[in-house]
Length: 206
Ligand SMILES: [Fe+2]
Image 1 (tube, rainbow, N blue to C red):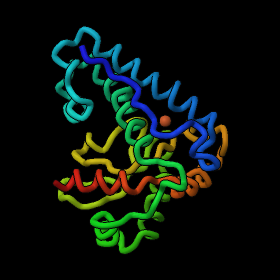
Image 2: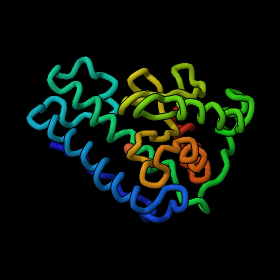
Image 3: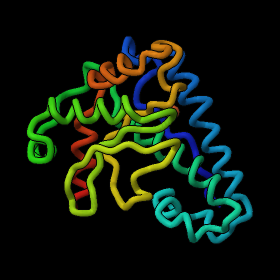
Image 4: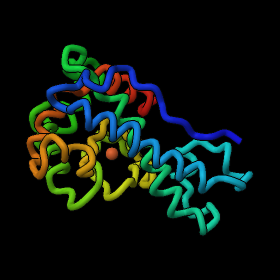
């Protein structure tokens, strides 16, 4: 069987300082993300028909999975997919740039300008009650949209393709920011890897 594995990071644990601290990265990536993967693999153990499907396929078809593993795949498969995207779309500050090309045009078309997009994204991340994620997605009409989901749900469950995300579970920021989620959200805009987001956008509208 194919087992899901922790994806390699393209930067060191301390590379996102001061916005995301080294200890948070070590625990978030090495413990939290690894645990989602371990539990996902455990849920799929012995389920031959489902073991070699992609995560996207599993999460888009949750209701067709055996009932006893639906919740585990939703939570832990979602956890794996969400964190994999998150590590990809952040980068050390010096490598982060602004949106450009087709993505910049699409952001202007959907939101008016980049600051309005940032405001909407900030609102989505701030008002997500409890644990969850804020997203920039491409919807079924090929348009950009800001959204948020609870727990480890991924927009693919609603037929939308995520191109940017922010983890607002307390485990993502509590060590450094404690209860100050808005400060963490503000910091995030310094470390978005817009080149990766632009590539994901172009892939999503193909
Ligand atoms: Fe997380």
